[in-house]
Amino acid sequence: MASSSLTIIVTGANAGLGLGICERLLVQLAQKNPPDVQEVIPTANSTDPILPCTHLTLIMACRSYARAEASRKHLYDFLDAHTAELRMALDYDGHADVLRENLKIEIQTVDMSSVGSVVEFAKEISSKYTHISHLICNAGATTWTHINWPRCFLQAATDLYGFLTYPNYNVEEVGKVSSDGLGWAWQVNLFGHFAMFRLLEPLLRAGPRDGRVIWLSSQTASPTNLDMDDWQLLKDSHNYGTVKYQIDIVASYLDALAAVSTEAPRVRHIVVHPSVASTGIAMQLTGALLDQIKVICFIIARYLGSTIHIVLPFLAAVTATYAVLAPISALVDEDGRPCKYAAHGNRRGTRAWTKRELIQKWDEHKKDAEVLVERCDALLGEFTK
Ligand SMILES: NC(=O)c1ccc[n+]([C@@H]2O[C@H](COP(=O)([O-])OP(=O)(O)OC[C@H]3O[C@@H](n4cnc5c(N)ncnc54)[C@H](OP(=O)(O)O)[C@@H]3O)[C@@H](O)[C@H]2O)c1
Image (cartoon, rainbow, N blue to C red; front, side, top):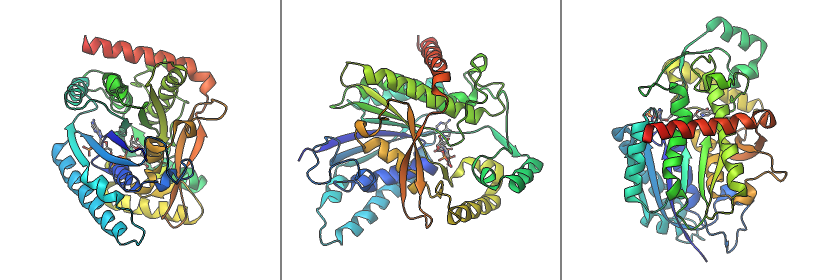
């Protein structure tokens, strides 16, 4: 049986969903036939070269070495505990031990809000590794400053589902600029990752199969405020939803180019989102106590039948592991329409799966995607020349 060696970068891997993605990758790759992709990969004697994975280098791209170090230790302990459980099964095939033996978890610091830091990161990675199989663009942040309480109570009273899923009461800072002089939310979420992808593109093409860039979007991604005269979102009071929509269309555009390219290997782009998970992303708004209340509300929503209030980052990470491991043929829409993958989960919070969604208003904004890519390339060129 063929086996593979994967080198995967996860940005923002030390906490929240990024840490959940790392945990879930380890659990999936500890099995020859990972459950997250069992439906799309033949289970016995798979000939898909990505599986089984016997060698994994997981690169945690984080802004704090100390926080990443603590999470790296957690990940080794987590896999050891999981492997010990697998060993107890009578039909255990020893694969988790092989993966553990050949597992390297590395830390490379990077600040997504600084182009210089991303350039340094790419230089370090290029000097240490011959190829990268996957880049998971997970790090993200919002400019939320406070809750508009009257609006919060009104939405709770009139639209409970929206209150828990598409909050209209989180007030965002308008005009926040990074130390590079760019729109801060735009840079951390989109441009920093775009620059990382472009700078690592030769490595993403240097492996035995197509490289993959996996972009973290959001269920709140929205084209409503998209304005190409304010493409760095400095005037946008809903910049988080807009930058996530920009990610949807930029990644879809890049993938459409890759899909028709005759070069091999190519770099494919896949958009995923975790639906609703409990992480630190809204902590600056809520504080610890309110955050706990929010989690309880999510769990109630789940019991009432919502499949998108997943809560646990480990479960919400299912779309990222699916995008890493599923064959490309399973990741494209049959009619060629751009799509993204959303996480859904069961009522008890024990199981999660992926569901394909179409990118909203693609036909209307395809040209904007092309222009955004041109502008990102030109801007990166200015920084690196
Ligand atoms: N949670 C959800 O329900 C949800 C829903 C939709 C989409 N998402 C998306 O999922 C992704 C992960 O978010 P999360 O919920 O896990 O949030 P989180 O708990 O706040 O984690 C964010 C991660 O990004 C890192 N990060 C933030 N700014 C950075 C920067 N300038 N440079 C490098 N790393 C930076 C953080 O590092 P530090 O620990 O150093 O701060 C942390 O590791 C984001 O793209 C977010 O938009 C989340």
